[in-house]
Image (cartoon, rainbow, N blue to C red; front, side):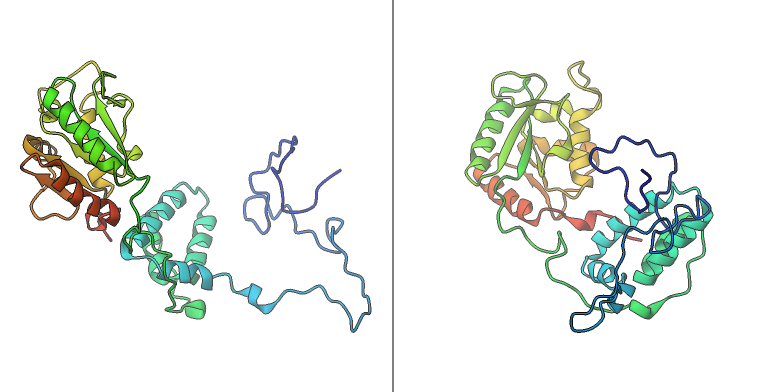
Length: 307
């Protein structure tokens, strides 16, 4: 029989709904479906008067009228870079909306959380920002909602990608030493090379920066970064892509010895930049100690542009 509520697509659901907006109120289906109540759509809830120590009433607390204070508490508790991530994500989603009315309604709701938030989303939609609606604005914050505002208490289980080359025995040797040093701190290191030779955990064709919390380039591996270096064993410029993506995503990146050339080729500035560790020598233990500090920072948010 027909279902008269706002729920659909649950477990065991075999009916194929044709309406795109199974909620109410909406502006896309001429107001349908309508909210079920005791008089509409064969209401699914009835609260007859019963006397216990007074009449029982079906009612909502006045606090249900405020659905904006908690989102504002969350937004206030983020650092500027995290707020930018959130705004960029909302910009991405709202840019796909076709209905002008729905875009306006989204801005109205965002504006009840934070006027600056609504204004920055409106900018990308090329729509005027609503007038500030401060009814539920407050300056409260909550600790530890922010992900990037605190150092990690432990780096155990974090993943580090160690870029090496099977063309360079010295890079393979250094990669093995790095792997052993990182493992003592509970970090999960993976050595990446052109092919699955002895000591290689991943090939460049399957590796991606998204799989690691930090990237290290071994001395001798820089031959894979040179402009003329091509190989049929991995997609064009894959080693450079792994390093650049790791850097752009705020992760700690490092190099030992001659591998600092990789930073020059990829345009990564190594001069006093937090989270970039270019060790001129080949002292693995000293390098790992420095790099572990970067892993505890987790993300270097100064690399992310803000509005």
